[in-house]
Image (cartoon, rainbow, N blue to C red; front, side):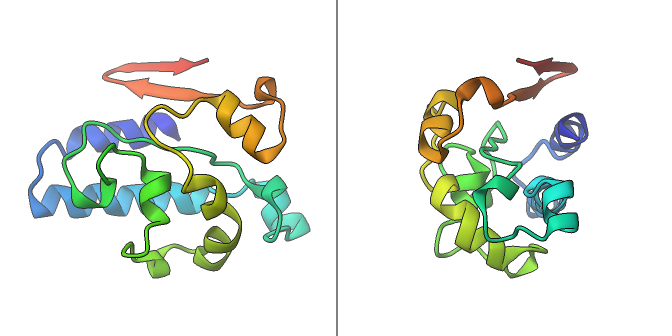
Length: 138
């Protein structure tokens, strides 16, 4: 899914309203599909637990649209008061469970920072990166 998000990022290269609307729609779809773990969310209905969280941090670069915030950290931008969360499929659960984690992220956040914050050993956090035609699972 990270490859698909990266491909859509490349399709919308400018800061035009058309490209930004496309990129924001893509980002919202990506978060709807990956913000919560499929097994935890759909089978055990654990929407009130951080254990259901799948997405801990998301950054889309380069920054060119207002919804990306100042550093492209989408997960932090979503938790801003002025961001319209109503179009996200699980916006109540995101506000209650994920924003306490997401709002702490910035461009310098590491998996060690996130692990400490949620009480998970950093080795259990998998980091995915996609850049122009290259996909890295670190």
